[in-house]
Image: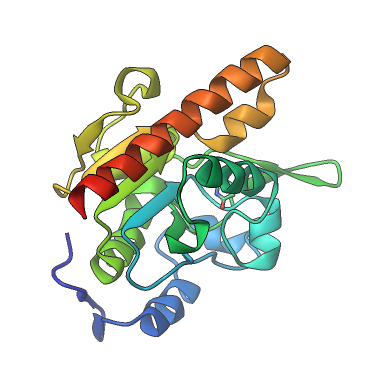
Length: 211
Ligand code: URA
């Protein structure tokens, strides 16, 4: 991982959020920048104890330039509060910083990022982690888990446990909130939402114990 808040890039080092945002805005590390409206950088306090990493911006995020501002973000916000975490203390970002989509009529349909895109974009999250220095990183879903763990993981097998990420950082893997939006059965929805909140509560407890 990048050392202590600085990462060498062509022509210098990124040591501030302003520099990071400028560099991200000019990103051409994979082809996704071509079809996206804009890059969507991480957002939150500069020194957050907790960082949450999603998959990639959705349609709303792509248009607004901020992470988790659409329907999945509303579920996430609710779950964070239910877990006893102050939403304002969390740095929220994505494993992939541009919206990947395909046209379906007039709509832009979300497309999963591939392994190459995830790997190319990991660079930006490494810098985010070097600047924010979170004590705990939450991987929301399989894409974030693959990026942080450096390998594909089965969420059901590893969720809700304290793991070591590929750079040695403490990671908790859980579901992506959009999974809850896709569930149709109300009982399934309630059960899975409660499990999601329980995973986040574990993160809160871990931070309390480390304080
Ligand atoms: N889904 C994500 O993974 N990230 C967002 O920012 C929005 C939806």
